[in-house]
Length: 385
Image (cartoon, rainbow, N blue to C red; front, side, top):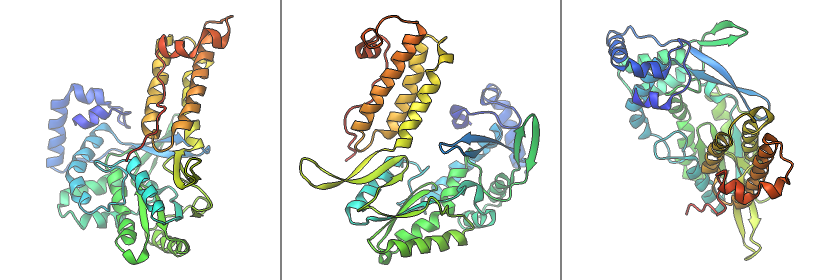
């Protein structure tokens, strides 16, 4: 329960918040334990909200009730060590002790080793299209406890509820494990585990699959990428998933670049040595995400905020963005983002106070970083090794 309360998050369909659960923790846990013991516990419906995506589309996010998140967390604590023993080394998403930067390291290693033909794959709505029967068979292959299997099935089958214009609509859930559920990342990793092993456990393929949740790339020797793409299509069809044909492509890295987890990979030539190297930097879309988030905080309708509060909000955004994107050859990108950031902050301050002073001479860089405590993005290379 402590982990769920610490994570916070919105209330589910029952309206109960993590703060309310924390306030009556002992009584709440006793009642939940009784329901689990006598097998009367039933998960509530999952609240579906839609999150805007960069390309104008939306992705669904499922929000279970807090009580259901607590039960899912208990299941996660029990099941994760079991399945972790089976997961492949090429899988990095939502696993203890693993993170996105390690996946980027692995890609750079494979490119340096000559696997420069890349299948850049994209699965359409992966979390929402996982086959329940196939997933439950995988869980049952390692777990024999009937009570655990029953709970997993109940969570998968929990109905979806949407609210539009004050009206609720209920939808049966016959496929998928909604993003937003505590157990969903583990189950999503389990469903694609056979794909990881199907590539990485076969040296004769001379290929490497690197995956972060439902984002993955197939690193192949020149000339073998086409055959690996055909194998991938057959696998995806057999798992009752859908490959996004518009976004899936075969990339010759010697001639073209590709994008993975918000970073652009490209061959560059060192102006100092003349040697070629794998250049990795935040993608244009990633840079735009930061700017859009800062614009939301520094706009004409936020001029009523104090300077300290406005800068504090901006600093929280930039620190979070920097923690993830400070990798590889990020210096040039971070420098340009910093210039844009400082200009945005000084214009907001200038408009807030209706200044008649010179924009750059009054709100200097030194003043922004010193008096107003604007946080500065790192300006050094983020070499991991």
